[in-house]
Length: 215
Image 1 (cartoon, helix red, strand yellow):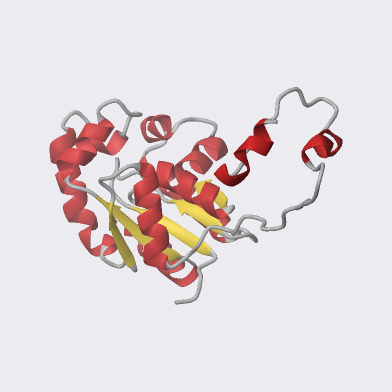
Image 2: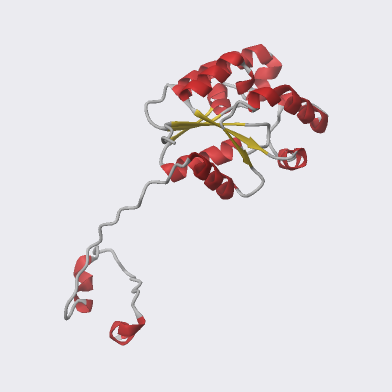
């Protein structure tokens, strides 16, 4: 499987798309775009306020533009998609053509537990349990088009790791060049290798040379 340049996370409210996207971007050193955040920035108001003032059709138009912006990024990008974004056929086609799509899924009770203290979700209304079940049914076919499904019931780190393993992508390797000095009197010359502002140094030594390190 070739390494993707764009990974799009989709799923129901509370599935962890934003937090997992942020963690994936941190691990991989990629750009991160959250479509809901993009919508709020472009509209100058929160998603909930857009629903009240302009209605869902206006929100979906903002969302479409946010998606196209995310897919146009020149650098590798993690995209946290709004929950209903992939339900639109044109959006779904664009995602499947230009990104590796990952469905984050969890049981409804887990999702509801996460949503209790979260931000306002306009589509959940006054009866989140019923609304969530309806959204799951309405979006089932769209979500099933995702290339990968990950059950997001662990920590953010665990879910991010599972996504990376499923897509066979690796975090960038750390630099492996180290300066090594060996020989008599090296311990006494350590100060010459440190910045003048250094006040404390941690010395790690093998047991075989512990006496010399303590000296």
